[in-house]
Length: 436
Ligand SMILES: Cc1ncc(COP(=O)(O)O)c(C=O)c1O
Image (cartoon, rainbow, N blue to C red; front, top):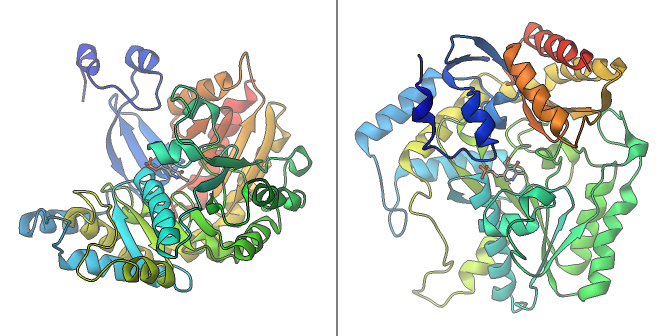
């Protein structure tokens, strides 16, 4: 399929160098399994599951069928004061995967909306328990929590903040955990547990009952795969418990098997109070996000409202959209019947070997990874990020789609990947990086 160049002007692409893209467009026109096809007919191996979305591989007919049937039966239900069976079924299916009592599920349409929803749940919860003075939020340097105003305020990536003013007051950032001492550590680094004590210092700075919630990605994904140091998440949990602070795991990338378990909370053995999720919830086939919360949080907010009143003044027209719920149900069924989380877990040592095998290349600055997620960082070129952007284009031209952030290639294959697919990802990366 050929696309006329002038027809590309109207669409303003997100997080993209639009001028370059429009000079040299890279479009996908078709996908299947582990592959995309470009507009020029080139077959491209998908090294990042789309955008960490497509864990079960592309164009799964089961999902397409479920969405088609849903749209033919019930295309839309008002999300306020009305419901449809798929929403309840999906909430139940998600609750079966979440750890412990994180059983109440609020639906939205993206990871960004999940994060902003979680912020509001945290504030509403504390207000309901008469601690509305908890107005501070804590996140981390180098965090990515989406692009809505709350998530932008939590963000720890300078480019995602600097054009947008002060965004939202009252957000404190823990130091990030990317330590040179942990360079080339496979899995969790041995150093850096004490970085969690920043949270204790914030408590001392603003007061014992002033922080509402701490947001962390168990593995900071978009910023280049920052695996937490050993003991770090446990210590954050302990400090949260000590001061009544809610702990939110943003599992928009980590959720649904990426770390070898349904959620990273389970892989790392730390249970948060809320989990935000999106992406692989529907295998990327429909936009959808969700927040899972502990039973007690839901109950506190609901019980805190007067009889007959709406309890939580938040929601989206498309919360629990029937087509998204159908996609989610079909996706979770595929994960279960094909045992895909276990498959990813079993494949991950092979995958990590392949990624860490690139460390001999002189241009490789670091390799980090856990489960089916890895970051290969190249030494910067003329400016930070320049080489990463160039690498991403070179990989595409060699037949590999990989998401890059700055100078880090973020590799996250679908769990249906074969060992040959992993070998091919590694070979194309090697060939492209060896040129530096
Ligand atoms: C941890 C995390 N939170 C939130 C988001 C935002 O998700 P979305 O792009 O669906 O709004 C992302 C996206 O990559 C993410 O990685």
